[in-house]
Length: 135
Image (cartoon, rainbow, N blue to C red; front, top):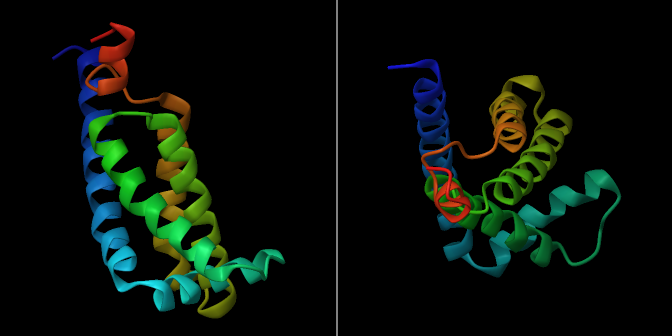
């Protein structure tokens, strides 16, 4: 396999793996309802945002769920990766303040991966590439 195909395969594996895991994290948060959304949204207080915590929590849960699905498909990949990056930055900040680096490390690692996908894009094996006629 040539380097270009390996790069596209690597992006597909990263998108599918990370996206699938985000769905498994996000869907239970959506299904749990407004009390859970409020608890999640309170993480925004670490950024000085203390209004509408349920809205912010729902946004995070949707980011993980819908963003994960979009990553798996390679559809609107960069906006999905940006949304997930922001969500992971908020999660990392919350865990750093509350629990320390050990508990924040997962969110930090995911943030780096989402930033990489944001920079690289979806690769040739994606719905985005099909729309652009590049696959």
